[in-house]
Each structure stands twice: as structure tokens, then as C-alpha cells.
Length: 347
Image 1 (cartoon, rainbow, N blue to C red):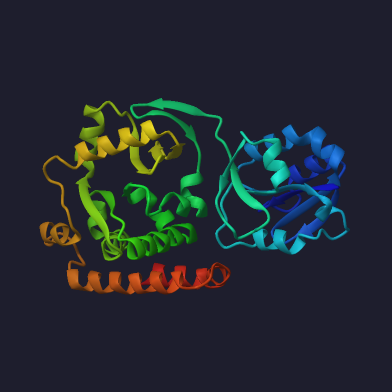
Image 2: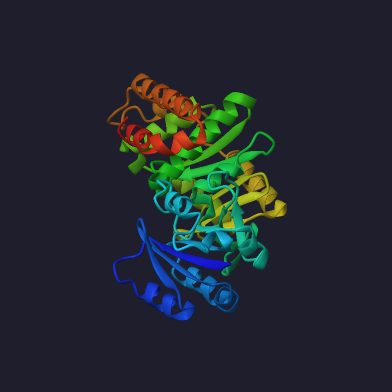
């Protein structure tokens, strides 16, 4: 058996490639957007912890870490599968493609992202090493919520209490964000699932076409809205002694908390319940708008594009796009994803 360590998204002559090649005595095989390093099973066992450390330290890249007879030939049997992973349109920093043996060797180190896209291999992220104690409980640093795997957190069995604000706009107009919207729209349509999203807005957002389009799109796919003014949100977090927390969401037992531009994650049900309780308190105050219609009516005089019917038409078109995209098989979704994301951005 032979091992493969793929480094994807690196620059030409990246020192990490040379360093890892020297560490593992590997042979080099080019691949789209990166390099595959092929080496012995013995080196895999000997250098395993160091390879994991490479991933942790260089978290802007994507990786492949597998061992098996499928890596034994000059051209690995899974080379096409590796290529599909390396060229994926839904690329996520720190994402790792791994085999069952790698996962079994470090079962506490990886958090798997449910997906049949690369069967029989799986994708995952390394568990965070930085932990913070907050008013909601202990959380670990992790970008997993903003990856394509986030669709696994939304299902018809689990309660979903989301929150978003301007700092998340880049995500919502990325391939990962579009997949999230498409999956949520499909779940709501198929199972009549109730979802709520608190939207924290500011004066700047009143004239942001991207923000307003997203707001109406949420409502169009069946998400209940609660709009909270930024200053009111800040007052709430201060009163509740939540410090610099900017976003807090939960889907089932999975929770996201954003603080000072960093994302933190928890799979504790106690943390999730605390977040839901805090959200309920937040939206029970005065000045909370419960629909896009009420929001537009309140700020009609200061919003430059205040034609609500125009925004509703755009949102209806977005809903149709999401439904059409969801009707494709998973393999075809990858092919058409870039086209749909571009339509969504320019709609």
C-alpha cells in the first residue's frame, strides 16, 4: 500500500510542498491546482502527526490524505476522483479528502462533512484547537459552518434558528451559500419545515441591493423573518453580557457563533438551547419587524430602491432558480453550479 498527501491551492514552488516531500521521501505527481505526494505506508505511519500539523498550520489550502492499494500505481486508481476534488467549484479552505483508514487512525481529529460526492472517500475538517468560553458555553474555532457541508445541518427533523448580517453577505453569494439556500428551500418545500432567521440590519443595509435581495429571497423560500436593528442588537449583547458576539445561530444541536470576524462551532445541545433562548429574548423586544413588507414600509422614505413589488419579483425568480437547481442530480449540480451562482449574483 502507498499513501497520498495532496496539497491543493498552493502557489508555484510553495515551500510546503518541498518540506513535505523531504519529510515523506515522496514522488511528485501534478494535479489541477496542486500537487500529489505519493510515499510509502511506513512514512505515512511515521509522519502522520506531522502531516496533520501541516494542515492545521497551513489552513488556507485544501488537502488529500489517503492510504491504500489504490495509490500503488504510477497513476493512482483514484486520480480522477482526486482531480474532481481539486477542481471542485465549492472549494473550502482547510477541507480534507480522506479515506476510512485515515479517519480511523485519527477519529477524534476530524469532523466529517456528510457527502456522497466523492464515494468511497469522505471529506472533513480538522477539529479546532482553540476553545473559547462564552455566555452560551464552550465553543471551538471552526469554519465548518461556512463550507458546502453546512447543508447537513438543516433537515426536517431539527429546529433551525438562524441569524445573519452584512458580514455574511460574501458567503450568501458564494457557491457554498447558494447550495445552502437551495437545500433549505427544498427542505421547506418538501416537509413544510419551519425556519426562522433573525436579520441584523444597519443604516448601510437600507441601500444595499445585495442585502435587500437576500432578505426577500429568505422570505420567498418560506423562512420566517425577524429584523433587528444593529444598535438594539448591540444593546442586547451588552445587557446579556455576551461580549463581542456578532452572530449566534443553531440547527439542531449544531451551533455557530461569530466573534470579531472569527467563526466558532459547537455540537453541544446545551449550547444550542441557550442560543435559542437568547434569540427568543432578542426578538421579544420592541422595534422588531416580522416581515420584509413591514421592513420596507417602515423605511420606504430612505431606501433608494423602495419598490417592494420589484424585490418580490426578484425573490420569486430566485426561488424558481433554487427549485430548478435542486431538481438536478448531485453530479449535474456540480456542472451547473457556477452558472446558477452567477445568475443569483446578478439577479
